[in-house]
Each structure stands twice: as structure tokens, then as C-alpha cells.
Image 1: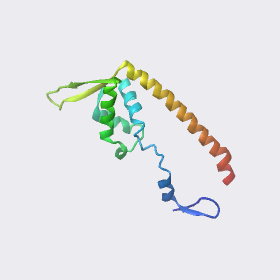
Image 2: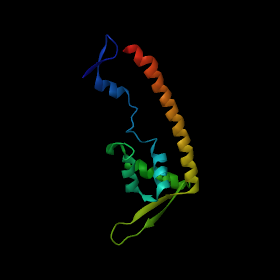
Image 3: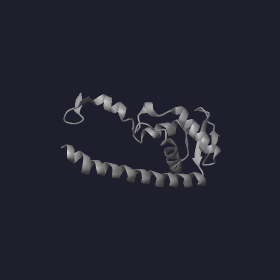
Length: 137
């Protein structure tokens, strides 16, 4: 499908998608605060946390399982979370993670940073809507 970039230049829609790689489906930087958020609600294990990442609107394919476990190990090493092995006769044993007080403080800091980012993004959208988009209509 073609769209007009301006009145003279037609461009392919999918070529624009490649140029604009900012995507909600990329979770690499959002993994740490998301894991802390979920663990602040209740202790959990890796696979369940991975499934919960998808509830934030990320595509299944975009969740890097290895990155999730590396982030969990890093958070534990830095004392933001703790873990223990839960044994069960019926299921495989699971490593259960829970957030520490330091992890709750880190989560609060993340929330402040995300609010700042949201404000910047809202300003960006407002400028576009008021000044740029209206000019091209």
C-alpha cells in the first residue's frame, strides 16, 4: 500500500514500518520494571512471569525468555528480589521469586521514570497533532 509522505512523494507503508522501529512489542528495557511490578503483587516463578509480560500488550515472539531469566538473576544478585525452590510431588520444582524492600524502592523509582517518559511522549504527540498534522490536512 502506498501513502503520501508529502503531496509529491509516494512511499510504501511497510518501508515506513522498518524505519520506525520504536515498538511496544520490544520489551528489553521494560523487562526489569515489569518483573518488579508483577512480583510486588505476589511471588511467582519464571514461566508465569513470562506469561504476565504478555498481558502488558507485548507479542509472544518479542519476549526473550533468556533475557527474562538473566534479568531475574541480576535482580537477585543485586538484592532486589529473592528466590527459593518450591518442591512438589505432582509438578516439577520451581524457583519462586519474591520482591524485597529494596526491590519495592527500585520499582517506585521506575514508576517515576516511566511517568517522566510518558510526559515527554505526550508532549511529542501534542506537538505533532497541533502543529504538524494540522498543516498537512
